Amino acid sequence: MNALPARVLVVEDDEMIRELIRLNLELEGFEVFTAVDGQDCLDRVDHIDPHVVTLDVMMPRLDGWTAAERLRARRPETACRIVLVTARAQEEDRKHGERIGVDAYMTKPFDPDALVEVVRELLEGERE
Image 1 (tube, one colour):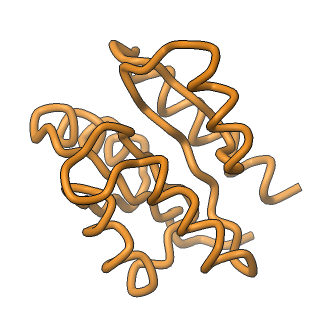
Image 2: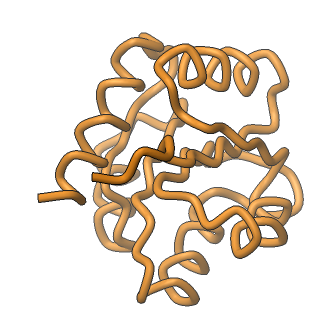
Image 3: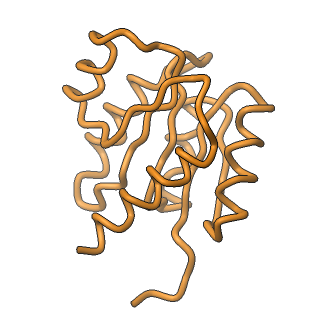
């Protein structure tokens, strides 16, 4: 069993939400990195090599949909888990997420404990 904490990259343009997610994940023992939008995520992901990426959908420069598609295209060998965290709650949005290969979909407002649980479940599924 790997003793190092799992790495999570939190991608969110709203600083308060980004910090809320970061703090809650750190309190649970995860090593957390942050990015301010999809482009920042793609610029940093290879260096960080996260186990899980949480992605907002509506962000400047590069939205979460496009970032998720590009992560899947460039990192199939590592297959980091992707969680979309978004205010977009329509069924078509969820289906779009499934089509591009996201692993989980959470709508805002969200319970920070529920997000921590989703991240933990994705990591446990990865280790099975």
